[in-house]
Image (cartoon, rainbow, N blue to C red; front, side):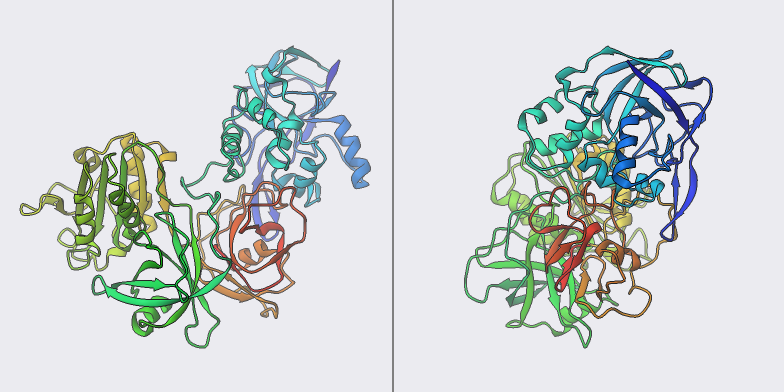
Length: 607
């Protein structure tokens, strides 16, 4: 008979860690007497990061006495006390290879259901002073597990633990954990996992992605801040950079030009998916070569790519392109990449952009027009005025080729005389006087779109939305789409600055622009963070590429920091790395886990 040995609780507190402040409830201590277990947690207990811990699905964390004894031997520790692994219940019995997802247990007056293994969180390592602990828990098949509270009630140390119902499929906690984090997955077990209603939604989604032969986008439990920001499988192109020739340059407006790029040897180019981008490397001045990314603005022909670049007044690279790049010049180009791509399907499509953000959705429109796509298509674009409206005629002609197209253009200049550039355009609530259709061109509105505009346009709520523009624009319009009724997972966004950070539990600080790392410069190979525009020499003073990125105040995405969860997976544009801690499962080709890797050559990261 299994027994509850200890009830451990602790309220969240701020803990100093590696120069940051982490708000965490990982510090738990045993209590005496009865404690009431409620739907969300135990009286006197709390979690600091409710996105990844706690809540109805993860109300109670369980760890076993046998695992304590195991780690005492493995780690050579004699100072481990109940609660040290962040668990609420320390139990005698209930091993991870015997307990199954969906099992139900009665303890004292309460009843519980097993929902998932422990999240591979860095904080257990922080609590124990063992940085690799998240990886070790998975590698040694001793994660522990979470319980959902079915019936609230009092519990206390010494209570017997009684199995009241065995979970369907009888998939153990250890097997479930290995199925997500370790290679050599058993397809039969994967099918079992997808057939367990008690399994938490985050793990269900990760297993659905695995069933679709795709690496999960991130650690289950932390919801994506924007749909479409993961880095799933891509078709292979060429490795690193290769020289391409500027075939011609075509002005689109006074500030936007399209650059057509050909191969130098007439070999066919890999077919790019509509919405992907190219990375271009240029030697601008005496500084190290600079890398920037630009969307492909049309579907590629056999031997030509087209990108379109807006001249930013203080943009070093865009100024170089507009002033010094000429037909016949050679430039270094990395193969097409990116996951903001037009998906196949039958649902209506809504393409929404502001200013130069039109480029990736314009490539999607080219693809739809070439296929004479029968599904309804909405084209919604915001520009400053007609003079600054790039691709106006091109998009209008493409829409005319579709059997069910809806075009809606908004010019903001008349509504807001202070607006000076399309890349600054952002929708906000406007009065009826600010937004009015042009009587000569009814598809053009003088003003700004609002949430109610989507209703007037007839945008369906079952559509797939593709959204590109400045961050403020995407945040606002993404909110409009959700308010209108589009599900978040069907709203896809693109941005070329660094992706929103995922740093679970770390207390937010004032945003700082990416910069060179403090201290003396390193003498190792150059590291380029392409999205952030930072190139800096590597120094062994940094523990990993992630550590270097953080020293540059580049927004980063991580959870375990030990090569398990793959939240930090980043596209490797060019270069080679070595893993300082071998990941339990290698990421897909062309990507790297920056939390546990160092460079061996010059490296360009899509970060």
